Length: 369
Ligand SMILES: NC(=O)c1ccc[n+]([C@@H]2O[C@H](COP(=O)([O-])OP(=O)(O)OC[C@H]3O[C@@H](n4cnc5c(N)ncnc54)[C@H](O)[C@@H]3O)[C@@H](O)[C@H]2O)c1
Image (cartoon, helix red, strand yellow):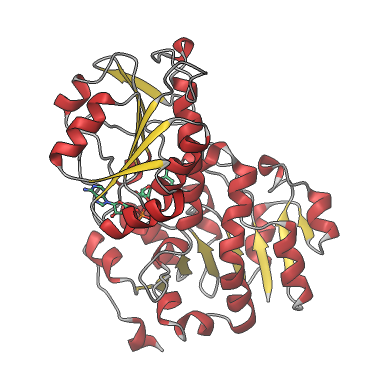
């Protein structure tokens, strides 16, 4: 198969959909890989590295789309890319179609086969191609929080780990899933005092077993959330209710009761945020202040560390890419979890939540295969 990788066009998107290791795997299985010139530059991966792994470098995105059977991307296509979509092309990327009618329409009108990273599931219903980005965001959150706790960045002027004879920062993480666990782990590694709250007792048991008391755990309910947040220097929001908006767990009253210069990092902001005062921010203007509390609510945190994020993402996507390259769409159709990734096919919407989000007809994939 001919596999193409264009440069990402979305604002502040520096990731690229393949690494040299991915190119080597594909070419060693007999596939051709065509990469737009400088597609990896934002992730500090250069043309020569792709070429020595066996890729060909294309002068522009038009060539990549026109000459490829499957195009790999990181983010959904932007309007400047719509004219490159066509019937027969497999587009494998984060699509988030329920959130975008124009992208859904562009895929349907062109007949492109849209396979979304974020809707592929494993048998236990977990989302294998979302997890690596949660891991990145979780591990970033204590760094971001530590920085914002500095006086010059609006914080209380607290060093995360304290020093001998002086208390460290009090860090509260709400949600003990992929991002929350990673956030707690890194904050504890920075020698902060860390408390993690979750509604799922098994997640808390895992933390106790692994961290043996170095990270405190609490069942999440109104009272424990209120009491923990008020005492915190840094609160990291990392909850997810799959398929739904994030529950607004922390009230404006609790936020107003926090110490001046405390910091909130709301990782859950891409699902609406779990603080009553959260609103989406960007890497160019990441923070704002409500009731003297610094808020950081960037929706694409991994974009700040594109090199790491590119490798983390492609480590997770590569097996799926290899399967699609070897067997075409049949690879996805034959595996129920992978099949959930197929959102559009030959002008039909085959993923029910997207059809219902836009009130368009839904065609079960089984009707088409
Ligand atoms: N901002 C970003 O750049 C960025 C990057 C990656 C992921 N995310 C988002 O971060 C969020 C978390 O993702 P994840 O992969 O860690 O999810 P996850 O499913 O692994 O974990 C979510 C946790 O939240 C817990 N939870 C649900 N309701 C709760 C409540 N009321 N109180 C306490 N805990 C509760 C669940 O039990 C679960 O353990 C998602 O919205 C995801 O999209 C954002």
